[in-house]
Amino acid sequence: QRVRPVLAVVKFETEAEAVALANDCEFGLGSNVFGTRKTALNLGKQLNAGMTTINDFCATYMAQSLPFGGVKESGFDRFAGIEGLRGCCHIKSVVVDNVPFLKTDIPPPLQYPVRTNAFAFCKALCHTFFGLNAFHKSRGLGMLVKALVVPQPGSTKRD
Image (cartoon, rainbow, N blue to C red; front, side):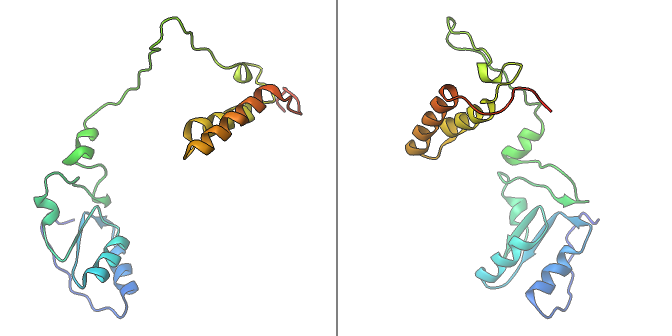
């Protein structure tokens, strides 16, 4: 891998062949595509490279807020930009109850032995918390009530 600009001039018949030729390489740091804006953007999206510049050269190097890095044998991770800063961090999640008089327990359907309504309960929670709009969230609440009230067929034993 050369760590300096290299220009390869290769004949090709179709755009698909050009993309295949460009991607048939074990490296993928940066790429540049020149042509009409629409065509260059289309080709650039198909290139396996950490960075792509359309109708320009070195713009990715000059924009210090952009993440810099490659794919394949050109490296993993990024530096610069928010992504680069995150690469220097050791992330740790810490959760603390904000309401001191409320105790967080594992919900009864999920306590061991896991009950037959556990899947319906978890599915309802996902709809309630992550529904795309108020309708989906309220539907999730209905599913939650059903999961807690309506008996579920099946056994609590695991096969």
